Image 1 (tube, rainbow, N blue to C red):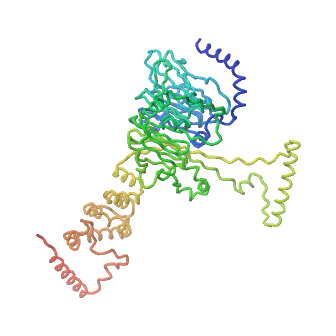
Image 2: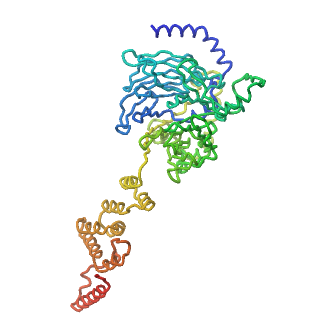
Image 3: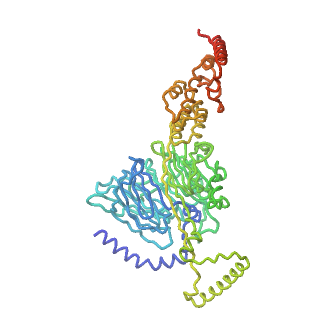
Amino acid sequence: MRGLKEHNSSIVAKAVTGPFRFILHYLWYSPSSSTLPPGLVRLATKQLNWQLVLASNGKLLAVVQDQCVEIRSARDDFGSIIGKCQVPKDPNPYWRRVAWSHDCALLAYADSTGTVRVFDLMGSELFVIPPAMSFPGDFSYAAAGLMFLEYTGSAQWSAELLVITYSGQLKSYLVSVGTNQGFQENHTFSFSTHYSNGITTAIYHPGHRLLLVGGCESGDSDVSRASRCGITAWRVLSGSPHYKQVTSYEDDISASQRRGFFRMPSFRLFSRHNSEQDGVFRMSLSPDGTVLAVIHFSGSLSLWDIPSFKLRGSWKQEEQPGFDEINPEWKTSLEKRKKIKDKEQYQSLLDVSWWSETALILARCSGALTVSSVRTLKNLLGKSCEWFETSPRVTSAHDGGFLSLECEVKLAHKRSRLDSSVTGEEDDGDDDSDSDEESSAKARYFGYVKQGLYYVTEMERFAPPRKRPRTVIKNYRLVSLRSTTPEELYQRKIDNEEYGEALSLAQAYGLDSDLVYQRQWRKSTVSIASIQDYLSKIKKRSWVLHECVERVPENVDAAKELLQYGLKGTDLEALIAIGDGEDQGRFILSGDLDLDDAPYEDFISTEEDIEQRKEKEAKKRQELLKKVDFS
């Protein structure tokens, strides 16, 4: 009955107010993005079509795709899907919102028309909340804020769902699951008296029970700095009027100074401006809820203490370290080289989240991703940022890591002339340049004539040829970035056979480089080159001697070289070198291996040569023994 009654009342309301609203809408606003601020539209349309929303406990992930919302679990590092919510394809995917309930049992999805769908963890649609009003192309009815609040007023309802539109209208719904699943409108509220141009974003602070609302900047000099930047806080009340603005000390002082003075009210006939107004694009709370990070339309980044709204730090776009860095792949790729000319439009921040209370996760339109200090914005990842495809999405950090979503866009190659000839397309193959110029001139002339005839007659025979469509391939990747120790990263580089980077890490952090050379030695065949490049650089003598004795080379020559190397590493010269402390115990050769060594048999010619050789070896041995300090 409740659903039928609401449906009938909505039909009557639309019948009465619909024509008036329709005329007002198309006379007052443009049919494009309507009342939304240009800065918001510019940044929102640069985002990926898909979204990532991590639950508050970090155990569940919602991946918003074109026609479904995948639910993934942290049990297998978000590798498998535990639920899939089917949703209609949205022609304007940038204006969609998704929110988890506080107990992570419900998932709310709002499309660009303002329609809200609520799902369970299995992906089953529980109910649909229709929008109060919607016009094609007008996204002011889309959800700027979508959030679940805990509801303790009655055991009948599981939670409270807030839907805040870009026009500044808030609606509260009580939702229930189980046998009595459904929803009921709780109350409404409007922020339009404080935000004449509507709002741009809203988030909820559960610790202080605050609604943090962002909008366009205000020209009123009598309010606090946060209010001038478009940021306000609203206390959630248990009864009417349900929300009360929280004023700062600066606001209270300004209000007391204005009291008693005559103030001329300001009237605004038109809500739209020719110049682009700055405002709030994205807000994110720190893990402890004490700091608010804000991205502005202009690309600026500001940090505010909560709940005092004291400005902690602010950086304009040109003051942010590495804001103008260019992806190195853009210089090598012909398709992406065009982006370098328009690099200014790729420098803006698009997403912000928190690594910890002292570090921010910043993602730019260019694909640059950094973990930056909250004091200086210095990149904590090193000299270079992590490069992704353009406009990556990021989540907050949980259990020492965070997730990022990127999309690689590729254009399919055009069909070659051979393919064209196979499909029956004509290709004369005439190399005469004069005839080519003449035929191209004739083609242009007849093309203009056909265009004129088609314009006059609209006959299909004169219609211009349709352009062959290009196939666009999109590859979406879900990437996990985790904190790790130098030892773990070092071992991962070795496992991935990135030996150069592994050696650089070993040098930078004082790690054992033997692990790199041992892996390379085991993966290579035994030869003079592999002995010199890998085995000779290993410092652990017992491991090298064990390899010389135990490893079986593939041929006799390699076995001979390996045994000779082991013998040279255990002779008197090696003993003396170790006694002198040379090379910190590195496995030392008594002499370099000579690639041109002649076979031993070539030196055996006469008995005299044998005697001379024995005398020389005995004499050399006595000289070496004198150098050994056995004490």
